Amino acid sequence: MNPVIETILNHRSIRKFKDQPLSKEQIELIVKSAQAASTSSYIQAYSIIGVSDPAKKQALSEVAGNQAYVANNGHFFVFCADLHRHQKIGEYEGRNVMPSIESTEKFMVTLIDAALAAQNAAVAAESMGLGLCYIGGIRNNLEKVAEILKTPDHVIPLFGLAVGFPDTQTDQKPRLPLEHVYHENEYQQDEALYKKQIEEYDQLIQAYYIKRTSGKRDDTWSTQMCEMLEKQSRMYMKEFVQKKGLNLK
Image 1 (tube, rainbow, N blue to C red):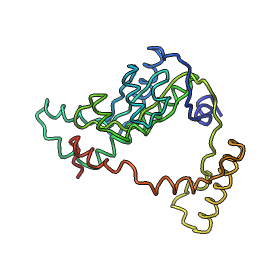
Image 2: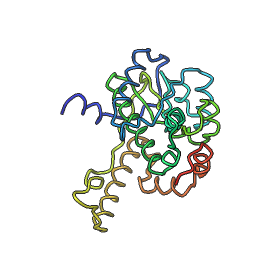
Image 3: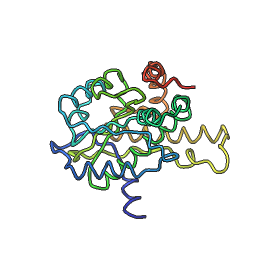
Image 4: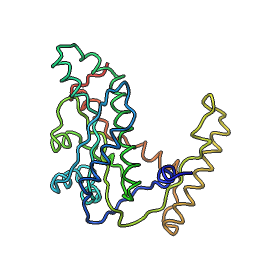
C-alpha cells in the first residue's frame, strides 16, 4: 500500500462542492496529469475543454438533466474525442489521412485515449484533496453541447468531470467482486458460479441501500441495471458521430 493506491481505492463520487474555484495551478496540474497518460501510437487524440463561464455551466447542467453539481463546482472539464487536429495535419502536410480518421479503429483509439487521460486527471485531483464526479449526462444532447462549446467536426464531447472542494462526503459503493471481474488466462464461463457471484453481489448492494436509506430503498444491482438497460437512451449517437465527419468504416 502507498499513497497513490490509497487515493485510487478511496475514490467516491462527490456531488456537492464548496463555492470555491480551483486555482490556475490546480487546473494546470490536473491537465498536465491527464496529458501524462498513455496514448496509442503517440496520437494524443483528445482535447479537454475547461468550463468556468457560469452561463455555460448552467446550460450544460440543463442538458445533463439539471444536475446542480454540473453548474456548481470548482471547475468543469469536458473530455472530447478529437481527431480534428489530425485531419488538419493531413491538410497541412498534403497527405490523405481521412480513410484512417474515419475508421472504427481510430474512433476506438480516440475514445480510449480520452478515457485514460480523464482517469489520470481524476486521480491527480483526488490526490490534491479535491472531489469529483463524472458526468455522462452531457451526451443527452450533444448537438446542444457542441453549440455551447463550439466544437468543430471530428470532435465529440464524451463526458464531463465536475471537480471541486467537497462539501459533503458520501459512502463508497461496493464494486463487483474481484473474482467476477478478473479472469485468469481465459474468460470464466461456469454458469453456476457466474450466477452465484452476481446473486451474492446483489445481496451486498441491497444491504448497502437499505442501510444508506434506512430501508427506503432495497433494490439490487441486477434490478437497477435491467431497469436502466430496458430504457433506450441516446440512440441518436451514431447519427451525431457521422454528422461530425466520422463516417466509421
